[in-house]
Image (cartoon, rainbow over all chains, first blue to last red; front, side, top):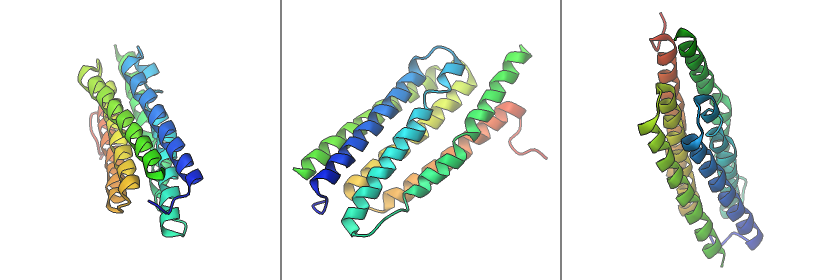
Length: 102
Length: 94
């Protein structure tokens, strides 16, 4: 933890605060928005911006601690990029089917 | 100084993620339709994964990363299976 210079600490702290705010806004939106089609959009804020900021902060801290680039946290980002659109697509199709069935 | 700044940022991020967990749990309990509940479950998985990633950043332990990766993987599999079940009535089609 002491290997981190001050500017890198500031960047990491900024990224963590940004990720926390984005994820909190997304989750509050999931709770507060009115219809299901509006609620669909809110949690993607946490999935994309929150995760990317946290992973970037993790990469910075680990790279400064071990004095070489540590990139294996980006595996989570890759997984989320590949898998994030699948579940909302299926959920939306299910919701549209149910609305047409009524 | 560095450790203080990092501790404050990590504490703030953990607080935000925990509040997000509470919001998603409220939607999971209250949600009017089943799709809302699946969406809330997905948000719960993402928030839990972010908490583990931030804890791994603070304590510099590699084990947290593996757990976060597994949570992301199983969250995707679980919510997709539930959504597929709602769409078709069965998870694996013959």
